[in-house]
View: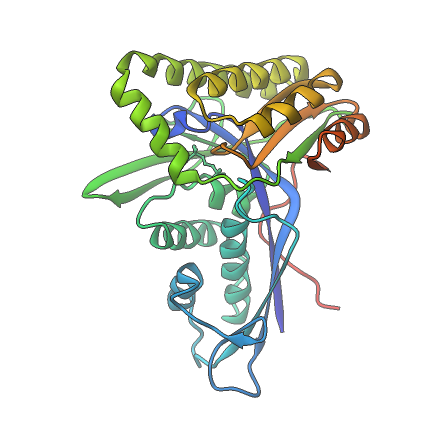
Length: 326
Ligand code: PMV
């Protein structure tokens, strides 16, 4: 048996504006997906959590299976374990893809290759989502820590790679970076889940319609880009007050774009008094919010009083890792 795990992610700055080329910053969270692979002894087909694997139901798993098939190509039993809630903007599907790549690499007697897992998972997610997927989720899940996506190679960040993908006959390009942030030990991130599922594609479409009908509103996307750059710089400087302030400002612009929701606003209002900064995270319309805070228990309590589910996550959670088998 082999076992690998990969973390979920949250977006600290730049969702939606990143679709239009502005920079975005994501970081890994301490909720993970774990994949166990075992040789299937009883059946001659692949199995997924005790059932026959259906490639049409899981196109991303099928894509990865084809890319990283083993030499003997024997049937395998895939077991998925994990704590990342689905459809809430925390990257559960990307983490599953990345962990599966890691487990298959081990089965092929290869060493763990985060760059390969990042690339193949991105292609798998794009295949499953009709060709559209930014590499932010899969890269953050593979490398862990902080990942910045931008349309230019950014000075002062550690450049990882340039990713290109063909979407609707157009070649899209992203420059991926990482960096080490020195975050004081007393600062944590709290994630609050509204429990309402948000649709990424519907929210992205809603913003596209708004910009098409009101081209002057594009200035709001530029504003998010400027806030994201300031936030990233503040994080590099270790200035947590400025990071929090930039998060809150980022949220105000997202709200004005119409991608927040009454449930998100309730959790954000509850978390704000105990936090350095608060914002929704991901596509919105439901899903999760995040709070940067020095009083994490108090922030968690405030979110739960408003009916949200909350947890505290650390920074610099590792990306793809091989799990010890007990
Ligand atoms: O909700 P999530 O984690 O799928 O985030 C979507 C982020 C967007 O910027 C709204 C879309 C994208 O492709 O970057």
